[in-house]
Length: 419
Image 1 (tube, rainbow, N blue to C red):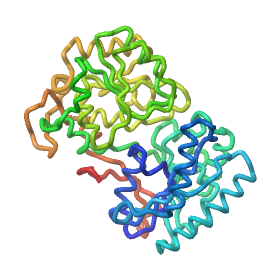
Image 2 (image 1 turned 180 degrees about the horizontal axis):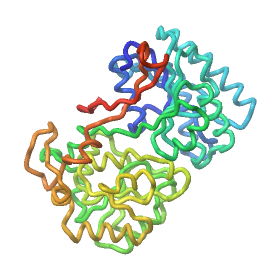
Image 3 (image 1 turned 180 degrees about the vertical axis):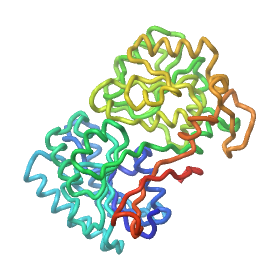
Image 4 (image 1 turned 45 degrees about the vertical axis):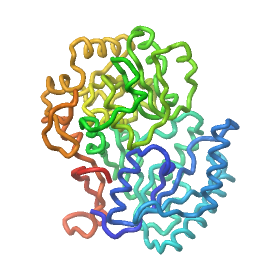
């Protein structure tokens, strides 16, 4: 276990939806000091209202300096020029980031930090901050996001991996593509905050009014509604089954006008992490509708495990990491098969508690004790319990005489509750 260390973490913006990055760092912050660096960008900005607002926010956050958000966790929002294909921009970024981050580290008294980065753009400054150890934790194929300079991001990523002591990846596809660039590459799949999503099983968890208004069945999705979500599939389902209601929860960053004439598709917007169990409690079936491309083929969506932790029947597009859970998840390689899977679940009555009991589940309350189902669910006696009640953390073990210096071991730790 890492104790008493100073950790610099390059990640997404702290105030965005909590992803695996935030869960890992919150746990590290229990025994270490963490400086969370807000996003330094991955794609070229545009003149859209969304990007202009984001740029303005970046400058406001930068002017505030580092902020303490938890007992041992600080957030800092630096300024970077996200034109990674330009040598001049890279030079400016490297020197600006090096100066500003060293300054913050001095103010916080950070010494010989561990650099834990989730973003390849940090390759430009990695190794310039007096780090003792560098870890690249890769959870996406960043070069495949829309709007990125693919060649520039790949170049920065390879530069970063050459500097790293260790590379951690979250999917088999990422392991295949990153391993050739760093021999110390390890596959560590996502865990889940099972105690939080298990609240969907608790009879006392309140379903929000906007969900109560939707007639059954409710087919649900939560997460960022971006261009990797298969909106055409959702439209196909909504047209084919006008009696179903589709609840789509999340921030929207793509064009959703194709739903304009569909009264059974409900765009409910972004909800707080704390509110999600109440929303998913109203789902009858959860869907993971992803387009198939290099980005999603390499993805290992955390929401898949969050759905399972909430006790929901899940139907997913045929991305590889979902297919690895085919004993728990129904896989639809095309629109008709996705529709057929949902039809089968609803027709059999295997939603909520009946679905889970049919697959060898027992119902537990939010404290983990046995209870009567609130039409629902929650933890599996077999494979699902391993997903629900564990979180993978990658731990750097030093000073072990039986292991090489700076050796790395993967370990499963119990996820006893929210961090």
